[in-house]
Length: 564
RNA sequence: UGGGGCGUGGUGCAAUGGCAGCACACCGGACUUUGAAUCCGUGGAUCUUGGUUCGACUCCGAGCGCCCCAGCCA
Image 1 (cartoon, rainbow, N blue to C red):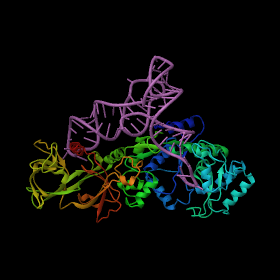
Image 2: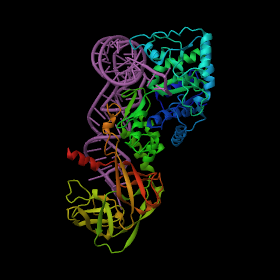
Image 3: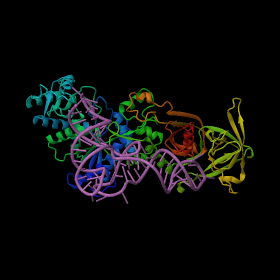
Image 4: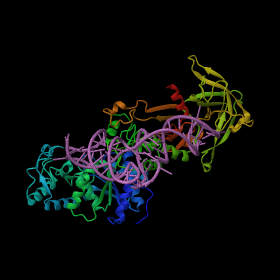
């Protein structure tokens, strides 16, 4: 165990450091507590990384522990998926545990509380329990079964476990205080009866299942967790968490510490809402690149490193600005992935909206190759060869028949540089019957080979290109934010806030030939355009790429402000 | 209405009684064979109000605002 002070100074680290200093604990152990009932999203990334980093920074370990106490919601499918996603995030755990593996011990502990007369079997119906709990202003009413004898409670609990009673007929409740200001302390339910469906791991062995409050802290204690980190919504469960531990006379009581959970602008995070997006077909599925799920973001081209960076940059606190957490600008996330991809992704030339350019004075049938840096910011990255010929494509965006002020790109009579190739000058424009520009005629200056000008003359613009006869076709999917409202979670109808243009599929793109062998997951920067990732649906016959994020685009901003 | 929590530029995080700083965003400039990256710079914040103090974002009192809680969900 190390005593070194970690770099991070968030309030959780401070609390842990203090616990170590004053001897409350002599080591640190945390846990990842997912319920296997859905896919992980960016909100889980924050929680997971806080657990992981806290353990790691103090030389401790963590367990992955599935909170599988509700057979109605949980499935094995998610157990696999969650481990896969957590691994991808780079998290390493000591052991994989399931709350359900410890139902026997938990039951013994419940018996212990019954024997102490701190828990009782209640025969009230669910409706009665609800009514008698009272309200925020009215104290609850004690159950008529609250003062049964210990012997009777023991017998009834045993019979609940043995399956002698139907669902909903009895519950085991902690005996605390029906008038408590904190509703969680008004005799909280510990066990409910559930005969169906079978549990994903224990099958039909059990027909009583523990509630979260009864299971969580006790599991922490059983496994030697020192710090049980969770989101702020659990803050008013902490008195109960501690009550159970005290009544059970646990020696090294774990400590629960809460932090503000993550909300992202233009994003929904609640499982219910995400599920609705999937089930009602607003997105392709949990892996849709527009989804804030780990799988979606991964497919979109986000890297694990950029997610770590994001969580570090946004920090840990208890500040609350929206639904039990902070509202982080999605632009920070985008900045993180740009930073990472800028350093590590090879550059490519790709034309998303092709406009044909014929270089009139370039010899018919001639081809030459340019040797181009894979990543100018990284000398180690090497070079590649890119072919050039008389007919090329440029992006339609890079040509204007009438150039607005400060437009540095191609327009009649103007000269620009083709990235890493030649200077070209627009001589003429060819239109079809509808007046649509179908072709641009240019001349080139052979002396500017490679893109330099021996005579020292300057051109303002450099544009990207792909040789028409060498380029390969590709489909490119452009993603935008899924919602138009920066806080769709707070909106009455988040479906109404969906951005109808969140996906734009471009089917006529042409990319440089070196992309021919690109594999799903490969990431590139298309120069002057953005960062792209080969999609999982891509095949050798049909290249499909996802735009992870665009490059910062100051020209777009100039035009945008001009419109206003 | 009872209980709990939180209030620092637009957003997020620092400053733990001593010059309110950083990141993202925004704006301006330099540089540029990516209108990217990089570099430099501007503007903008301590919820309100009393008090303690030489000195308060920090401590104390009062108020205001926001978030969470009345599942046999987690």
